[in-house]
Structure formats: structure tokens, C-alpha cells
Image 1 (cartoon, rainbow, N blue to C red):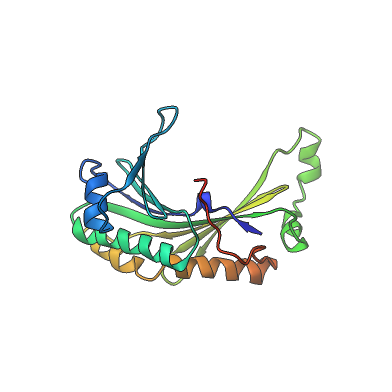
Image 2 (image 1 turned 135 degrees about the vertical axis):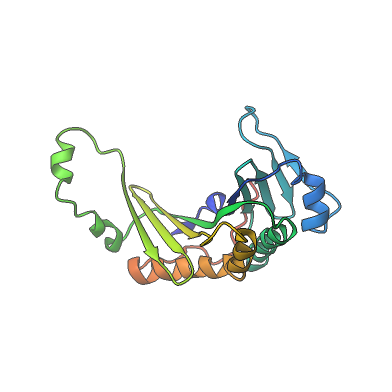
Length: 215
């Protein structure tokens, strides 16, 4: 399997003030940089994307998204530290949840994947029309969060892992989520890779660090 680094992200869901989370403020206050780049959508849809080093940041009224351009421990840890810093600096921001997302593509799914498709209604459905896509979603309770595992079957097969963290109470949610985020982004990536290896006999095809310079 291969990483789809364009789908890796750490997303904090809340009520964000985009005027505060400006490129100048983020660069100086969060990343300790003099400046950061800004990219605007070509067709005018979607928020601008701020770029600092190997990290992309997008801000909307409801989401703060960090996306790595390299899958290294240093980059993922820097993203995690940035998210925690913002939650500490803006403690009164209403926070609903945060999630850490990883995406992999399997070009030639092994039997451990294809055997999951033993649905009794497949042949009968196929008589009514071509099945364009089959998606299996499972939610698993882990000690600190919920893992949502999504497998979209096909050639290739797409696998999404979403580690979802939600506060138990709205008061103090930013502080609670800041603490819950500590040491998670790298750990959950490694947990997901090990899970896919153990359950589906999948391993990463490449040994080199994935560099997403095209994003």
C-alpha cells in the first residue's frame, strides 16, 4: 500500500475566528517564523491555504486544518504542537472535537481485503445495475478515542483511518482537547499502519520518506 499524503490531516472542529488566525499571527505566534506563504483557490472556492515549511493550514468558521507535506515524525509533531499551542492560547474558543486522518491506497488488494466482500446480495444487486463502489465503515472504541475505519473497495482500494476525539463536557473543552492531543499524531499513524498489517497483511510499499511537494 502507498500513503495518500494529500489526505493526511489534523482537524480541530470549533468556532474559529479567521481574523485572529491570520497568516501573520500564525507565523509569529505559533510557528516562530517571520512569514508564511498564502495560496488561493484557482476557481475561488474554499479557504486560502497558508504554508509554512512542510505544513499547510486552512481556516474556516468551523475547522482548523493542518496538513503535512511530508510524513516524518518531525513534521507531524510540529503540527501537533501547533494545534496544542493554539488551544492553549485561545482557551475560550468553543471546541467540539479534533480528528487525525490518514489515507492509504492499495493497488492490488490481498485476500484479507477482498474476502471481506463476501456479501450475499452482491450478485442480486449486480443484476439490477452495475455496482460502482462498495464501502465498509467500522467504528472502534480505543482507550482514548474512537477509530473510524473506512474501506472503499475497488481497483485500487482506498483505506481511511480517522481517530476521533471529543470532549466529555463543553466547559473547558479547549484545555481538555489540548491535553488529549499530546503525543497522538505520530502514535496514531503508527497504530494505523500496525493495525492494517496485523488484520489485512498490508505493508507500506516504499521505505523512503513520502514527500508531497505537489500539494
